[in-house]
Image 1 (tube, rainbow, N blue to C red):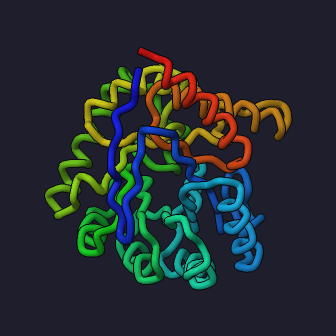
Image 2 (cartoon, rainbow, N blue to C red; image 1 turned 180 degrees about the vertical axis):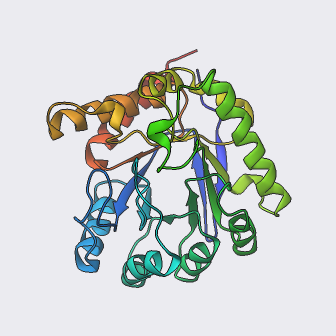
Length: 281
């Protein structure tokens, strides 16, 4: 399958996606994220890590200040901004790659955009705060719509989805319509099936295998599988290998972008996957 090529319009630039896989590097500035909580909650360490991710080949930096790990509780707008703004201030004018901020709160998105963020990565696909779409529209920002089922507090209680890919596709289409009605240019939107976001362990692999069925939405597809629970292995190193393998599977199924913690390894793996994909008829 050959991926369709898109121009993803952001605030200050456009990214061409589809001719090669773009790598989104993860920077969590939280004390409680599932894989690296507390490691980069100090602004100095976070700044150094952001520079390192760009040097390793990240095309986009994605900063998250509120954990959405299973069972996590929501935090206040004030607390999220307390964690986020210091690193955004430090990074102003220091990176050549666009900055994405992972938030579902319109007020946090507004403040992040004032500090030169280019993209808002909404983990709830506008189901938590629909006003976020208007904030993005007013700023001409890029918007990622990540499918979430339920909330992190309820995921452990959710049963399996009857037909996960059909449900995800339908609900992402509804999110796209909400964004358009709020004035967001469709060319600024990327969709994400939300691997692990309320999906049962065994169904995440099915979503990856059927990813091409989301392509009918006519938007670039982002997939984040890095260090997700369904990939957990006996050691941290083995889990990282599993994450890279899942990232390659996503690319071969049609993902235009992958969101990862280990950028250096994923850059090499994506290069190989892209070469294979280019030979696919």
